[in-house]
Image (cartoon, rainbow, N blue to C red; front, side, top):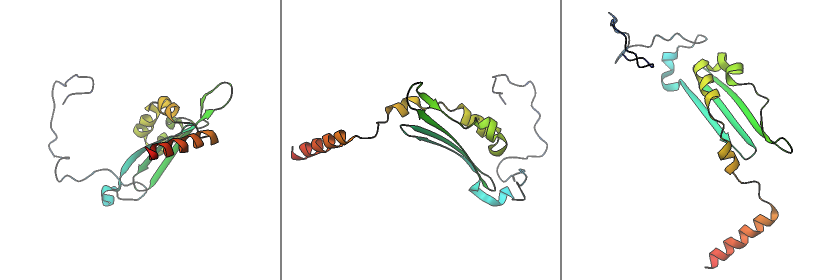
Length: 142
C-alpha cells in the first residue's frame, strides 16, 4: 500500500478477518437513528456552481439520512472599488459540522470563476435588441 507521500510502509499486516471486499457489510453507524445501509444508493454529496454575470453561487449538499444544503453567494460590487463581495463565511467556518470536513474543504478549495463570470454578457439594452433583430432578419433573407 503506497501512501499519498509516495513512501511505502515497511510491513503490511493483513487483517485476520476480511472487513471489506465483495459481500462485506458496511460498518458505518446510523445517523440520527437512520440505518444508512437501508438507504441503498441514497447517500451522496453534491456540489453545484451557478455562475451569472453579477452573481456566483456555490452550494454543497450532503444526503445521508437527510438532506443538508449549505449555500455561499458572491455578488459583483457596482461603482468604485469593483470586485466580488460575499457576506457568507467560508464553508469551513459555517458548515464543517453539517457537511463534514472533507466536503467543506473541497468547496472552499474551488477556484472562483472570474473568467467565466466576466465572459457572460450584460443584460441587453433596447438598442442591442433592435440590432440583433435586424441582423436575424438580414440572415433570414440571405
